[in-house]
Image (cartoon, protein in one colour):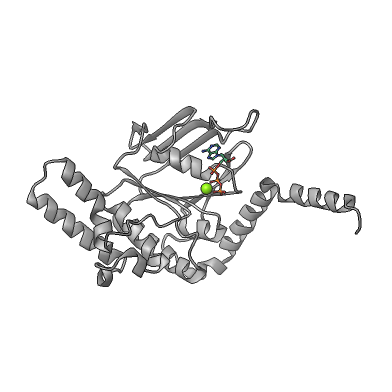
Length: 279
Ligand SMILES: Nc1ncnc2c1ncn2[C@@H]1O[C@H](COP(=O)(O)OP(=O)(O)OP(=O)(O)O)[C@@H](O)[C@H]1O
Ligand SMILES: [Mg+2]
């Protein structure tokens, strides 16, 4: 059984203008346990909407979505999400942020001191995994963007989710930091054995991280193609220069260009500039 099953999924937003194409139409996707799947596609093709539906943050209009065999009816501890903008609590230290969800749970439920100890051990292990054990007691405003995002990832992993949903998590970081984050998230994926669904605008990032790349297209939002990535499981930065990498990148970029409407926009601009009266 797949970890995440999405069948004939459709989404029409109530607030969408009359006659607007569906945000998602007939989306079919099965994601296996411990798979790393990346989603790319032109802006507005429904990547975030799809991720939010799997997270249970958004309702779907038609079709079916399940996680671990259970239909998704809302947010759940087995699914954690990381957003582009580091959503850390500024009043809590690094370790405080990582433990936060556990703390909430502890306040709600009756737990024993060995549960508390186990949680503390887990937080320390995660802190090590993200390489921030030296700054456990620093506050978010004392950290760089990359460090803050590492804390957000550790916080999401604290409850041992089956599925980690990431919406352009490295989109706001510079290129060098992104490379470091790429190798870190691959390492985390190996160690934690989490299933990862990762949305990005960056085709290099999608190929480097993903075992499969799902290419979506807009109006209505749907899956165009699914590409298995022809690279060894153990990724290395040099692979970005290999022929299979470059060929897949060229193919995906060409398909995105076709569907993004850029050429239509350029034609419209050319038409407008012909109509413009000279000053
Ligand atoms: N809350 C909402 N109400 C109405 N329409 C929405 C809402 N959220 C998204 N949409 C529309 O649904 C479509 C898909 O949006 P979504 O944000 O999922 O795209 P995306 O692929 O994540 O785009 P981007 O790459 O720009 O982040 C778009 O046409 C968008 O305008
Ligand atoms: Mg988006």
